Image (tube, rainbow, N blue to C red; front, side, top):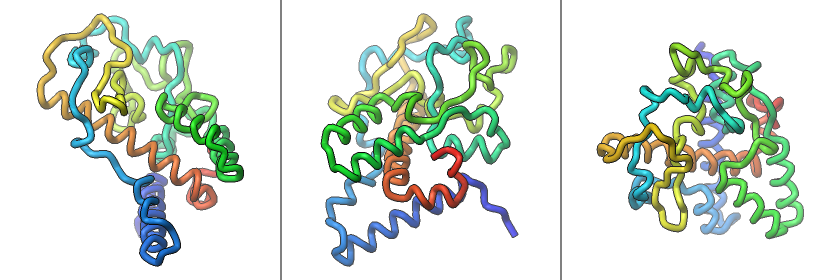
Length: 230
């Protein structure tokens, strides 16, 4: 019998949750507008790149590697935590989602729009380390950074790392370069643009999943293996 990973369980939980909501809408228990809360963004949502974002970082030739000189912390999503746990890296996860879930519960109890606005601000800026778990650091470098080989978890590295240093401006719908550096070139190829957009879309859609599951399906998240982080 195939043993399900935590990532598999998270995926099944999300699909079951969407099915539950859809059935509720079809039976008239929930308003149709509720569907908008779970709608994924696609490539069509992105209108293009700002002029600054067309400069692509050359990480391979950079002598000031971002992974070795991190001023803040690397935030983790639910799927990031799942992938790290599935690969035995529980000791490298610090913090938890408790601050965020408390804020969500506060909003659900009071329906206070100021709390909802606070949640939206946190989501827009990628939350912060008081509200979500993050990767362990050794000094200023990521625990998974190897001086000679670079990232040791390239295939499962956090979404924040994969989308860095780009972000989407929801007003202009343009991709922006969050932290320009001195190791850049101009003229992104179409393939490079597609890869950047793919990372941004994955990141934003994961935020939707995290918000929905932690707000409305917290107990089931605990049951499948996230109790320690909620």
